[in-house]
Image (cartoon, rainbow, N blue to C red; front, side):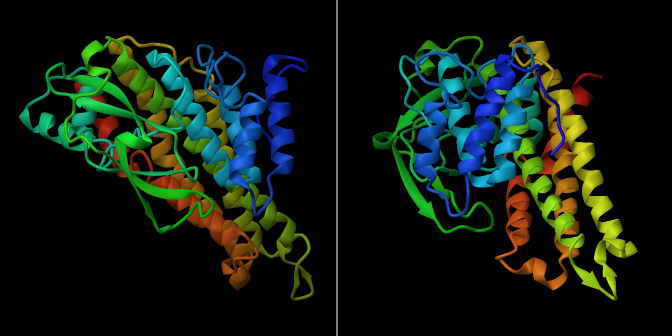
Length: 372
């Protein structure tokens, strides 16, 4: 798997070496709780002290975190998703100034997506009308939100729309503060739990609303940026693994008296899969070198726009690439023991999280309109 590298002996290289050692332990089936415990021990998930955890240092760009997540996803997509979500929750919790660590889930996506044009105006500090207020209250209110993550939760970071201040405020929900309903898996990430979380209180007032800080919308935008980059990194890891499996199979399987990777149709499928991975990889690593530290209101939309644009085209491209890899196996590709059908399902699942390609396109178009 080709991607950017760091100087030997540097903090970045040491962190990725730890990720590689963890990935060697990740096999199917996996004991997710024990893997998460190990991720905390080696510092991938932040503890009380700052370290080399995922998403902790984004001032120089989160390239290290993106590469780590991609490597984890190459080994196991569910492990990568669970570690990413908990690590992001811990970092955001710290940035918000909560007094102790307790959240392992962050519910960034509202009840019905992100909020389209109303969301775009909120982030860009545009003028919100009554319809925008209604949409944002509905989406970032107290309605239940669907989460795909680890098998249980200790605390949830919950962004809320404050209509009076026209901004995002945050609360932290513990198990006693919310109703949690487990659901059957609808598509991918079979090793994770799918559940809806709903605050027991119907009010939008939160423990943080009384002490709201000017940068809470900035932390929200940063969290959205890190989450979007993480989701693309997971998709890239899954697609890379699928391509490697297809390439290995094609180099061993014979049909018509020759290896099938010599057949033009198979060679084209492998080329299309490889091209999708290469294009997304270059774009992701370029964006991951961009600092995510700004909380200036004027910079938030400009920070998110290229990342949302990447997600809008990267996920469909990688879905196509994984489907091409599956087709190399022919009918065998649909069998569970091959593993390609799960890769297809996982990528389709990622495609609709935190904004579908259509919604992300509408949001970035609105930002372009607002900027003239």
